Length: 90
Image (cartoon, rainbow, N blue to C red):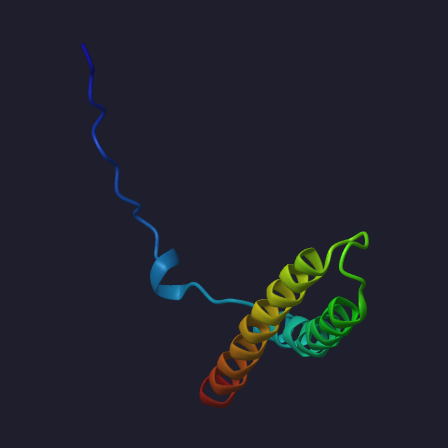
C-alpha cells in the first residue's frame, strides 16, 4: 500500500525575487550566436561539397548544420531577450 507524504510549500521568497545573471547570459549569447552561425555555414558547405558515399555522409553533415542552425536561432532569441530585459531592469 502506498503512503502519501504531505506536501510542503516553500516559505521563502525565492520565486518572487529570483534573478538570472543577465551579464553572463549576454556574454554567452554574444559569443555563441556567431560561433553557431559559422558552424552552420561550415557544415552546410561541407555537406554540399562531400561526395555521395563519403564519410561522414552528407546526411550527417546536413543534420549537424540543422542542429547548429537551431542553436543559432535559440542563442539569437536569448540575446534579444537579454538585451530587452537589461534595458528595462537596469
